[in-house]
Length: 453
Image (cartoon, rainbow, N blue to C red; front, side, top):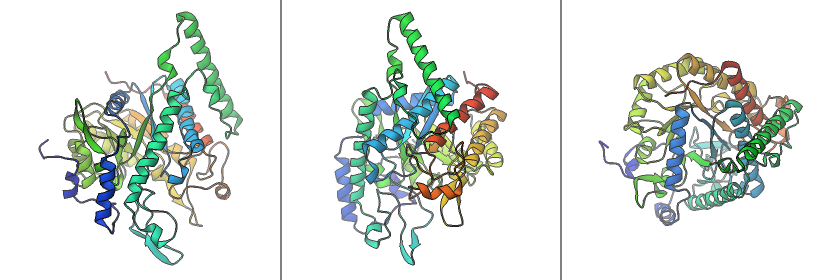
């Protein structure tokens, strides 16, 4: 690298969205504990993901990334983890069957505990408090002491991430994703009969194909019995990320071993800022959220800084414009990437740009707007000779009522029934599954994506 990089070199840059800790000695003590802890992921898992992302960028795989807007410590429970994993597996089953492509499965969990905020403080019931920045920083309760940033929460976040990841691995290794038993992945929350019929048809088709394969070959297709599953989170709280960044024996490079796939949020994507400085040196594949404020010149600078060696699978661009802004905002960015002669993985986050606040102060997202942005993303990439190789959703495996619309016709008056999120509204099981079917229907209507040689 032209400039010397090390895991702490970000400290010489402007670092946005960082909490103001009152006790630096306590911060260093917490970071010392983290540095001594085992990694949460391995370097070879990270490298395997990068190779799969490179194939998605070339149109030979498809990325499905999804999970909670912000994990909560109190939700590290087996039934909640299982339900999150289950809906992602169900969506991937629909996509595998409908797209005829291998799916790269990435969860927004086992580390998604930090959230950017638009202001450092907020007023609750007339009292001004530090903003809730996620469980890794402070608590959501409207209490001044709870809202004070606590560095020991970083150690707690590590522990909860480890528990989550260990349970996910146990489920996967124990046959949870075995395609011989997709009937175990029940869709109890899905009430719409069309969705249930379509999903059952896919299950039956896959089981028939597996039986045929085993009859003809007299062997089990072992590669189908277990699937890869990777983790991701926004690399927002830089002291935590630095503490989990280290070299590994007999392998070049420095890895962030708290997650397979860190991303940089739209608020912290300054090419000269601390978050980009941190991310440019790690060996992980990295993603950047890009939206209406992103200028083509800034995007070109980001590409050069984050991927100077043009490593396949290194860089993913996750677009988030909103249904009303994507037609004008996305084409210039596609052209900016083309002008650099690069192949990146384009993914669409149709959630964040479509958030709205209702008259009562409740935030929601409309299913039709989410789907509309996603469909426009496919169309725009097709029209510009590019490939949309992935999607990024905020969703949950619980039967929440946070986004309106979808096949069940969830209305604004229904939001109060099961609105749980303390940050952003998420798709529920039925809405998420319907979104997967919508991607497949779009593919069948317009044909397969362009595949690079």
